[in-house]
Image 1: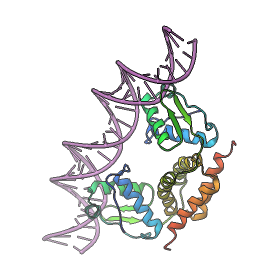
Image 2 (image 1 turned 30 degrees about the vertical axis):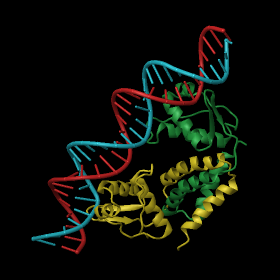
Image 3 (image 1 turned 45 degrees about the horizontal axis):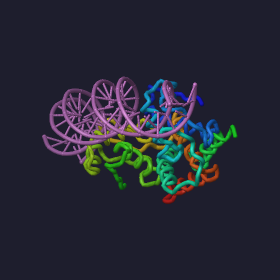
Image 4 (image 1 turned 45 degrees about the vertical axis):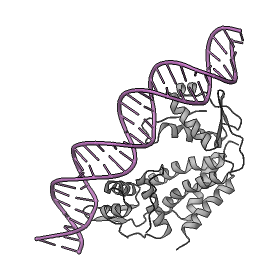
Length: 126
Length: 126
DNA sequence: AAATTGTTCTATAAATTATATAACAATTTA
DNA sequence: TAAATTGTTATATAATTTATAGAACAATTT
């Protein structure tokens, strides 16, 4: 899987990595059960520090997206049912974005169209 | 308009304020043309620093949501057409969230339902 | 005329982000 | 079995971000 880190971005490196791994799974480049590279090798490949990758992995674990097996490695979780806390977190994250879209002049249909086209994008290769 | 700042949140205060103002406009509590409180009085009301409110206002201005009239005050913008850069910014912000929803086990219909219910929420009072 | 406005500047402190190095025990590989 | 690799933990440093504070300015508003 190809990861592109932009050191100049105002988005923290570990967040960029977290997001691109999530998008890689959503796109079907990574599947449940797949192992992720070791924090050391991944860091070396990306040209970033080991702890930055580690932080990303633990963020992914907290979100329930990967499982870290101590002294072994990280594996993409097999999708369980959505927990209520995960759903609440998603709502809290979606809300300001949807509000912004509305305030900038989009109507409901346009927002749904935007979301639908992104959804379509992810299901392209599966 | 009621603003609730959580000093313990890991979301910066100026971001919390920015989001709540955006949501206030989306909800219809604030209308295009309405003036916002002065940075000093707002800061005093919220119990935060003047510069924190100022940072939020400038973030809102950058997003095209308010207009700051120098030496006068801040006013909610009259919604123009969505610029392509604003749309691209929205896409970039929506993408990781939608990916996360998919990875956590939601299907397309459930994502759209989630978005629709939030949209419904905002149009409740108008 | 006085008060209020956004703006700008300097300053400080705490938290966050990113890197670096080292060491540990457990697992995996050769 | 020995060697290499694994995630983990700890300490350390530096730059950036976040938040506050106070002061001063010119322009607007009262």
